[in-house]
Image (cartoon, rainbow, N blue to C red):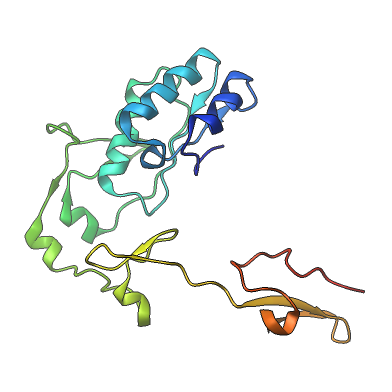
Length: 193
C-alpha cells in the first residue's frame, strides 16, 4: 500500500492504526532516502514491514537506494525489483544484481554506481520510442522534453460506450457520448440495458 503516497498524512494513519502489513512507498515520491528511512522506523514501531516500490522505471540509482534501505531496516519485508537490460548495465556500472533470489548492491562509495558517459552516448534519449513519443521522456504523470520542459499529458477525448443493440462496448468520442472531455475514467459512461 502506498506506491503513490507523497505525504505523511497518507501513510501515518495506515501505519499507526495497523491497517496495513506492508508499506510500499516509492522513495523519490516520499521525498528521498531520509524521509523513507523515517517511514521505515515509524512502521517498525507498529509491526509494519517495508516493501519499497521498485518497478521497471526506477533507475539503477533508485534501486540501489531501495536495497540500501532494505539493509538498514529491521522490518524489511520484501523488495520489488525489475532486472536491468545489458545497455542499462553498461551505462550504469554497479547496478544492483539479483543472484539466487537475493539483491546485491555494489560496495563502491556512495550508491556504488558510476555513470559511463561514453556508453550513454550510444543510447540517445528517446531512441527506443516511436512517433511523437520520441520527443518525450516516455514517463507517466509529468512528461518532459529533453530540455526538461514539462508537457501536459493529453486529455483523452474518447471513451467506451455500451451499444445495447450490439450488446458490446465501442469507442466513441466524448462529445458523442455526452461526456465532457476529461482524463479517461472507465466509469464515466455506465452501460445501459
